[in-house]
Image (cartoon, rainbow, N blue to C red; front, side, top):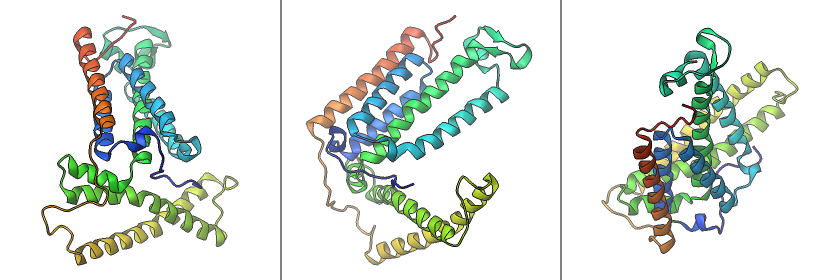
Length: 274
């Protein structure tokens, strides 16, 4: 955790988009991708998300930890899907092509195809989330949310949450170093059970420290009479520029492509091997 996960300033075209635009792009693409089971559309979103990472200049070392964590979670999810619903793909696509095995846990092409679809959803949604979190200044994002009609109280709460992510990480690293300085080894040289115990030893102080900081922030905001007025001004006031409208137009076209694929296919599901 040498690289703190949070907003990273940059000069890319994605950094220059308003916070409201990036939120709309993230929500629209995520919702449309989650509703679709057409692998053609999901692959298109994957390509767009990966290209977005490159354009934003996000480096691997800054996101490797979260990517590895999500990869482990995705692998566990795919395994559990097969264990608890090994024939769900057959029910979904109404065909059965057995690759090997027999009985309930016979491995079918349909099940593999369905689990590939689930994996594709991870592959496009994670890069989108990383782009949104790492290229969006919390203050600009709050101003953008307020500009598209969201209450400034809610907007400010979301901004504080985004701003607090790096702070929590730094606190975690500090507590971890303090534990290790006291002789508690949490390296790969010790058993997994001891490492898990060490993580729990860090989490409790981290929770109490976070609650203390939340109380301090809330008291400070109360003393400044935050929330008394119906409206407020913003230091990072944002206006929708030409590039914002072009990006939003592109997202509308992507959503229309999904609607067109659903009409042509007749459903949200597409299976090329039937």
